[in-house]
Image (cartoon, one colour):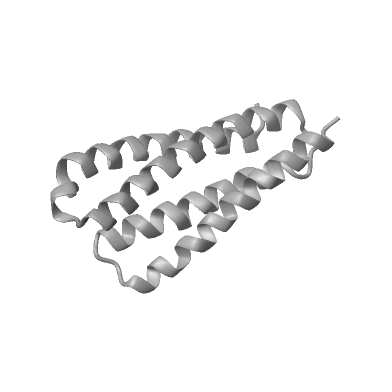
Length: 127
């Protein structure tokens, strides 16, 4: 297994681990302290982290299958950046970070979209 695949397997597994912890913590420790909008945003962050963490696991396997692709690996990096900026921005503002931190959240969403597009194109072009 390549170093790059291992990085994304670990990153995806860690994203899933922390999404599980943050989801449970949110439901049992945070929910009562948030208004309805904050709670919905928090749940969205957890869900997106789960889905994109699973995406990282899949992409790690695709990197092994299509080692010559120039678009599959960047897809994983874009998803990872997206998790950090999108979900991380929501978590940070939920736990009291300045609202300016939330300005990075849309960039995280764009990074996720770009990551999925890169994966689509990478798989279509793979030989």
